[in-house]
Length: 256
Length: 259
Image (cartoon, rainbow over all chains, first blue to last red; front, side):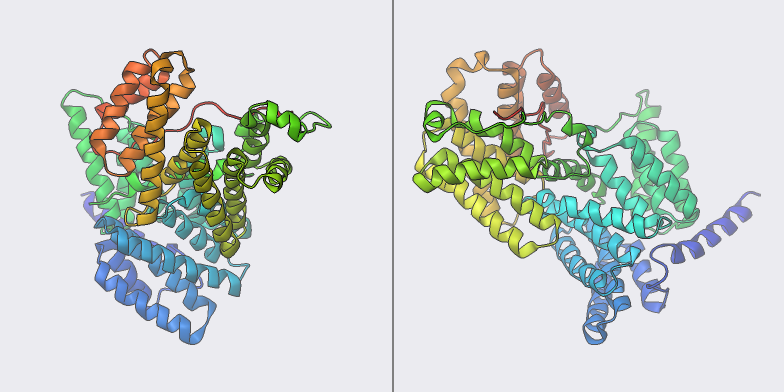
């Protein structure tokens, strides 16, 4: 009996999710829809083709929207490459995305989306470059702070900033509490977006709160049941719960 | 499949490294460690500098500078430059100045000036290399360079970057030399010195994929740092996955007031 309402919620969720991330300059044309689907399915080759098309379009038109789309597709290519642990593709996508986002910022310095994508892509690049934190860390957080300043309702910017807060040691300005606050804020701003819930689920899981993690990942699954990243985290939570049933408390994952 | 979490975990160290390289925004807590330089503080004359340990003279300003205090970084750099103007082969001045250039590189990157950042980065690493070449038996210089390179590697790593691999390999080789030199008196060293050296080795080798070596150093921590928080941390890593990259945050802060 409960399945029909859930299905409606899920369908509504999907519809909203398709619009939630970087709506505006990256309106959901067929290319964006196809790219998002490829991200969800972790289809690297397909995304690479879409990135190439977007790159050509950006070079030809030199329009802000085209560079923004190119940056967005590269973040999605990063996610797909991550699913296959393909570091080479990941790094190239992050570098290409940073270049595109920089161009977008240059063309429209008041765009919160452009600053958010630049900050997020710099963060993605950090683990793939020798001394990456020293080179890109501060700039990344500056860009994310700017994105929030320009549009305090940019949920994606809150998600990216929350991740930074979470993984920075407290003595250096990190704060798990702030990370949870920002993610909760993002979830409230975009109630049907999946990303805030995926990260909340991961953070709860790391703290050993498997029931909270399950609740959050189920939110994400309702919003978008097809996303590979979501299903990966869901699998982790299930594995942890099975371990818990075996008589052991799910271990908190150490984060230092 | 997905390793996003593991990748994100590495951000922690990345953030730490950029913070130590000069973040202002995230340093409220860390700043508590950095006591201000006394009003009117002056460096000793070059003559005095020759009579005292060089690192004792400059470290306060350099660490404060790396934590974001531009004025103190500039003062430390100026002091080194004066020494180097008189003696371009002053290895200690070179290694500290090289570290300062890396801090300035991070400021340039933060402003989006990658070209300047790259130039300062190359010069900084070059000066540190040169310092070790000029004074191969100087323990302080080896530690300065190795700690910097291990920290950089922890803050981001490309396994296919041959130059980075060579740099990290040489830094670890130097750290091992330091351990050999200090071994006879190792138990008398401070907990911080013992723990940081051995964790630096464990972390660096794990980054290079030499997990057996990394675990050997973690086991050494159990012996050499018995009863300390380093021992507890080493146990946690030894209980974890055998191929994990060992991430370790330096405990304590090296910053103190300059003279």
